[in-house]
Length: 427
Image (tube, rainbow, N blue to C red):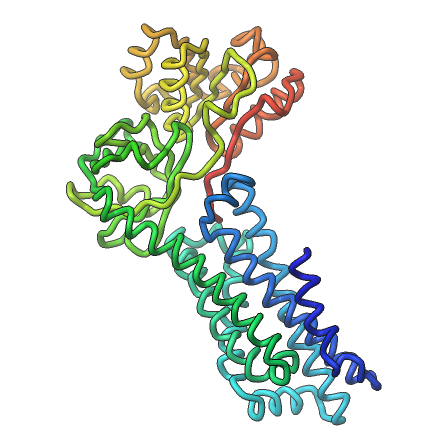
């Protein structure tokens, strides 16, 4: 908010802002302000997902991603408003039809062709961000389209410097604007490109082997040097980019399914799309770039003991890693593991072995029709964990299951500060 006010101050301190003597000039001025604010918010969007460690630790990756998504449509609306107001203002001032004013701007103002291309890219990103479009696109296609937002911001930058009334006549404002873009670009390049690349040369992470856990779930074992120095805690996730055909152009968030040791770590992924399905075909030795760790879904987040873990689907990965960490800390742990069929149970032998260290596991197997009710409903949860109101509760699983559990916990009176969950999706 303070940054937005400072950006508006660029317009306010421009002498031209005091020379609004006609409705056309007022529309043009409003368009200038909308352009400044829209460009600024686009940079904020980039910073939210620039992987800045201090920002992620303070806010959490899931909330940053939610803010990024929330800003998306609003940024495009502000930029479209900028275009419409400037065109309308010029048309009113020079008494031209709107289309004539638009043609005049495109053909006579510098760098307007690149700005038009940038606006087209922004609109494409906005359309593909809509819920109906996301549901019909693969993650890989969606990811590649959104990379276009970086190009759109770069294309729009040139016309701001060469055509923006706030910068053409004010060298100090122009220098500040260039510095703002440079700072954001530097942050993105450092944390999203340079750091993962440096990490690979330091740790040399590669695929060791792929193990099928269930008919639709695989574990990918990764090998490297001094992996314990990554600082990854059980329950956290990283963004993984496998350098092989079909994977190298997109990074996906996957949680660890076991604590990291010096040379090995493991992720476990359920078949939920083209990328996750293709992990089963990864070859030994495939290089892996990792960004992170991210997330607050860790043992350190709890404020009391004992602990209740509730897992479903691919959520068993981070929950299983958390269980091992908590047992090492001698915490009383109860795990509820929800699956539709017995064949979907992952890590059965590992979980059963952990019971010898004090873990209590209850497998909730079957469809609701077969079980004559939802085993995660309030009454069922109370039977399964009579003392749940005194426990820290961690929930990880499909969105529907998570929503059901959170509703049940709320009805049972579990305080929100003792409920821990986290969304790992980028879109």
